[in-house]
Length: 331
Ligand code: ADP
Ligand code: MG
Image (cartoon, rainbow, N blue to C red; front, side, top):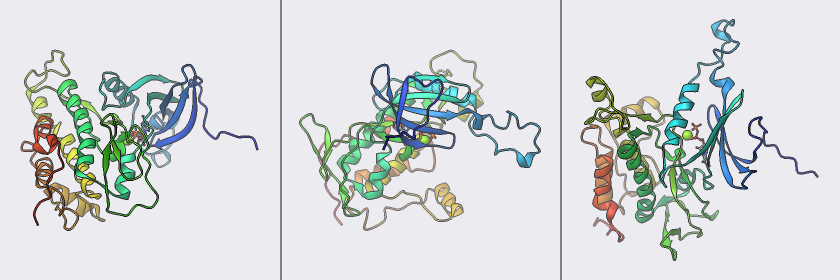
């Protein structure tokens, strides 16, 4: 047999060898790749242009029913995603290494997160102990603090699929459902999962496709430059950072129990539950979880954005700074 690669090749990407697909989206595929000039392992997000611009290119003569679905992503959005990512420099944010394009594609060369959407996979198997959940969520929160407070950026798409792990942990195939995924510390103080072993490395925020620069209420400036923004715009954006805090609450809830706070088979019922902020700490799954953890979640999954915790309030909460395992609540 000749080992035949079924990985695509792209004009404009000759410097990279694609080795495996890591993920896909509506308009993009993400590959693990080798930078042939340095030997470095990277991730390459390949965004198809023809689908982005299909309704403009060559379809003008077609009647509406023959046209492709309206394009969600546009050139300007990709360029905004790139511009925002370029300005980032934080250990909890996936780094953009370079950006290029060919007639048919955009290429985003990214820091490789070998563990992929591990969060999602672990949650499917089990749930996290409080201390491992804290270890993970604090990394995400530090990333959000950097975005909100230092960069004036709202991510707007915080969810398990966009939180990526640096390394792949070893999860045994036979793991009992609902047993917490616990950890130990190795010599360097890194948490390593007790079940199966193998550190999980850092967790980072990816996918800035929906992110947005917001206006600073006090200085009325976007990202440090002088602006002439009307008050209604500033007011409009006053609570925009709070969407990330709600999402952070959903992620923390899911980490601790293994299922999301809001779920229903019916999209209408689900929408209603979210709108009312109707969720419960379902017994027996939440019985062993500490009161500070529950209280922290209540401050995040709070319908009124003005009452919802900001990232600094989140980080100042006692649950986040508890170094020792929290005592179990008395039943
Ligand atoms: P989309 O806008 O299509 O959601 P993402 O940037 O979220 O695009 O990438 C889609 C998927 O590709 C992610 O959910 C993840 O599984 C994978 N992926 C993205 N970036 C990386 C990366 N740097 N390293 C490893 N996998 C990645
Ligand atoms: Mg995504």
